[in-house]
Image (cartoon, rainbow, N blue to C red):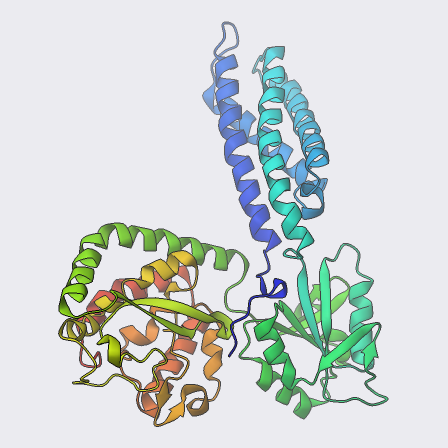
Length: 478
């Protein structure tokens, strides 16, 4: 496995998540500013005092302004990347909403002076100049790099693939990039190029391509009547952390319209979903970093004491760094407190640590048994390489019964469809520590895949709450 990070590998930025965050910021600021502004003017002599009516007035004003901005496409990436135009049209939209509500205020018996409208204009102008200007500076280079563009790989190369590509290319306003086609056939039914899109290899090459390059969606454009071939293809691809869909145009079955989702003009049948996408992925990442920072602050005496004990116990560095498989089989470097003698350390874990292992130091035995050696991985969470909860990352050469894990367990790499974690569902169910037998690694993978299927923020918090209790059971930790 070669560690490689190319432009095509950089992650897709979910436009919906970004828009939600921007709308949330707009709503909070405009509501707060509008409320302070209106209460200030409404308390002038002769204007009356009705806080409930004022609150409704401000809420209606902000919602009207935001709905109008959304309707005019002012939250779209294509608009936001043009700073001046985005600022100008957003200001005009908010001013129109303010003028409309100013007239409504008089009908609702809130007698606001004309100065309120001038102040609202200054408020929204200052806010939008700052926020939209900053957004434009952030969006432009990312947009040029294709970070908001969904990258699609097509499986198939015949008529079905051509029809799918034609539907996508004829869809207005669809921001996609068809990276290429993958098909096992190279004959008259499946030419080397389909509608200017070249084939990049056989289907077996797609998994490797998706590991090395960013692929956000795989569309299988093969007729459902080719059942055996379809199942064979899906079996090859299900381990990837990518949404997989079957082109609805490739099927002659007349299914209910509700069975399909649409990407532009192309109907799609859902087969596999990436476990964490969009808002779910954002919330998990936010929770991971927030809690990791909190744990570091709370546990710094333990971190400092462990570091001192490692330093005094044996010569060598305090931290041990090891390359392991991370999300989508990318190689990451994780941190641990060193638990072995430096001269006997095994960075690739070609030999698993066992009970009474002479390579382990005196302090190392204790910190491994209590999992204190894992605490520096909180910094891996802050870096974004790990999550607090997820399948434990394994060393690249780790073996069970003299065979690499991926050779022992069918579908092993499916556990890498999410970011690995410091603790996980397998660990709190007793499957932590040594994985030297086929049964142990099979059970760990089974729990890992179950975690991926059942994921929720509540499930993560449950696993975190159970982890201290699981650490008390040290029979498998060496």
